[in-house]
Amino acid sequence: MQDTRIILSGLWVATMLTYLLGDVLRIMAGDVVPGKLTGGMQATQGMWLLIAAIMLIPVVMVVLTLTLEYPAIRWVNIIVAILVVVFNLFGLPYKGAYDNFLIIVSFVFNALTVWYAWTWVP
Image (cartoon, rainbow, N blue to C red; front, top):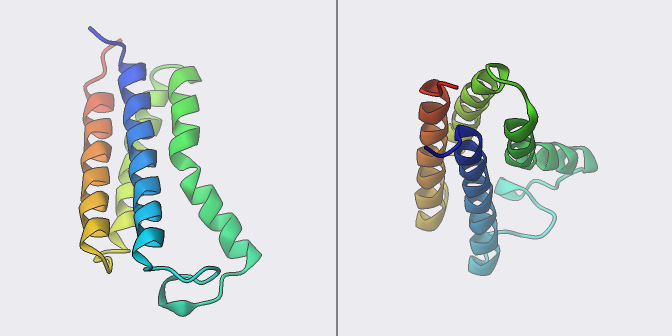
């Protein structure tokens, strides 16, 4: 049986790469204006800091999943995966079909994260 920590870490990496793929495709499709947020709002340094912190969640979860003791990490994975889905639901629907597809893929990764963490027996 594979170690659940490795599986969960891999799911967080997959989630992060899915988000990054969406960002790259958004740039390539011309769906973004540099320095502006959705709706054409000019971003401030504080907004960029918040965006960076949100995008860092999967990276932090990889590290925590590999280092934090069980059962704490089990609950952290469940809670953070659910919160990430709720946060992303507020952005739906996105402009591009590719973006909607990728966010659904990330929901699948988050659902698998919750399932693996929920059924984790050391």
